[in-house]
Length: 185
Image (cartoon, rainbow, N blue to C red):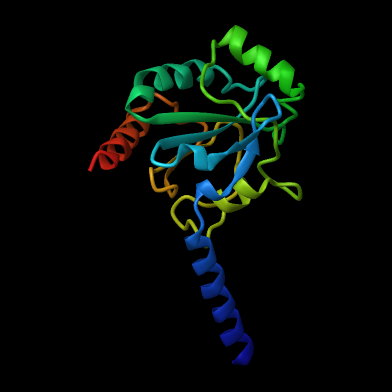
């Protein structure tokens, strides 16, 4: 009984601490190596996407860039986060990734330095995003490249879209519109 009570107290404390956090509490490195605090996007709607250059979903870069162009003036930021966790589909250096994205897909949205989105070296941001206690509706391990997390202007995760849901899918654009409209209130 005491063990159960201790577990429940720990669970509640962990959930409370996680609930007090937001995406704004994390800093990544930009693809050029400079610190990139996500707090710079406070008040914006952010779409965080773990990306890869040699994946069957890589053509989603084009849809991500089109989405960014369509919504950036309304307050949407797309953040590409390269990861090599799935089939070694992002083997290049940050400079190679940047060159690939800008020359092949004309990416203008912010790109971060390569990180790990799962496993023993999982980046703290992804530990937070995938935490099932903090985010019961959107948490859970990343299954593949191009998983998308929509973050509201308050820094909280609003929605998650798996890789097979394209950036221009109706459910994605509807969620973005809803988050952007909530930001106007």
